[in-house]
Image (cartoon, rainbow over all chains, first blue to last red; front, top):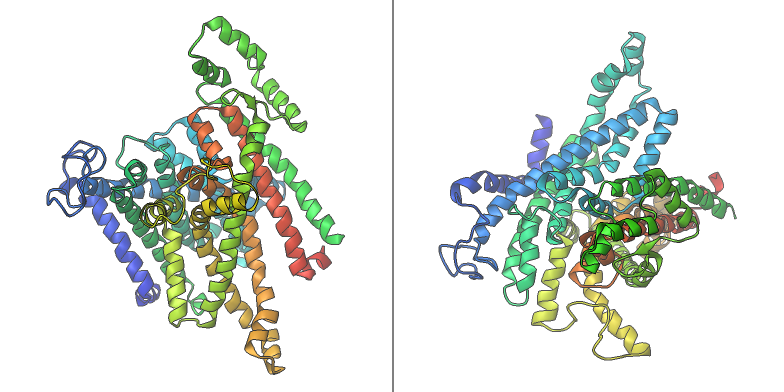
Length: 276
Length: 325
């Protein structure tokens, strides 16, 4: 309760929450407001925004409604961002927990692998994964998740290292609890809060990664994604720059919302750090 | 000397990592649909099965996967990255040709982000929770959330299409042959927008870290001592606080080297710069897996090299590190 009160006292955190709720509302209402396929032809191509009441945000190069694509794009961005984050955090927790709890050679091997993933640039690995497994919605989502796990893994490991020798863990050991019980039931709940807060960073980066991939036309072309639309608008950038500009603002608002909420949560959960 | 041996030990420790990456990506690429020969045949406009068979034998693709991997690593030790069938040149040559623009772009972006991140971070920390701080922190948050490729496109619209101040893309003007200082200026003009585009997100990160680190150091005892000695504020900041607050910034360079290289893939594509990042993109689109693997190797090498330099720099900034080693 205290944490919630602290959260709502910060204007930045409240703005972030409003932005995020706005994007979620767009994702939910997309089907209601635009029952037709957002990728179907709707009218004349390249109508400027606010010039035709039927197409509030205008139409793109091939005459598809930009507003509809923005609303449906919210679904895609949240879906990819959300699922990829869950994948990254799950792998990260698994690797970090084992490395931190067992130490020794397990830690050595796991950290070597983590280091390998961190040495290879994220986006280059993403390109390799897309080159190998193709670019459908599922593979792109999994690929984004797979390249984002090292940071959460390191965070979880650090938490486990500081927690594994505490009294409550030793008490558990004396009681004869199994390792899995200790890791999942005792240490993990205590190690989780900073990892959950970090999930907002992972989600922000995931959304940016997917949109960059879509912009390069390496993501799923059969869904209405903001990155796809920016890539499409590039062909008419010189005059009809709005085709690229509008979805970019949508990405900016979403990522801003996610990071502000994450920061707000962080400040609310660690009030001692707030003064900095 | 101690610093060198310390950094050298870390460098040696990264060699197994490098091999781990290469083996991992090599095995991964075995799963890719189509191989070099398929790409080559597509380039030639098709051919019969016998030709494909002969070509596979020629490139050693008929061997078992472990044998191929062994072959690749053995060639790699002699700095032979294989042959790119798309470009008709050795992969090493293709990559070397594309390396300078990327290195130039990364150095420029890093300097831009580091310098302005430092300046803005210091300004924000001096006026903490007052309007300069609020303004800078808000801008930092917005820069952090801006997709770089979108910022690049909008910059092209404003500065190249409407104002016509800067060229919209390319590495240099190919219409006219320039030499000496004019060529340098021409390349610099072409790199302004890409540098800003790539550096923006790092500027946001650096200013945030610099601000936090300044605030932390400002509270330490030695700063109070310096003030008690009667030093003026400028002196306290530049001579005492800044040097200590810089440490996390330097660490960050090493941590962000990979991210920056990844970011240059997108930025080079926006501004059609003939760099390593664009090559990575092209090799994915053209299914030139040999080149892609070579790029993986070179980019990992670059990240390791940056981290080596950061280690040296770090030990120089903080003598305690070398003393403890």
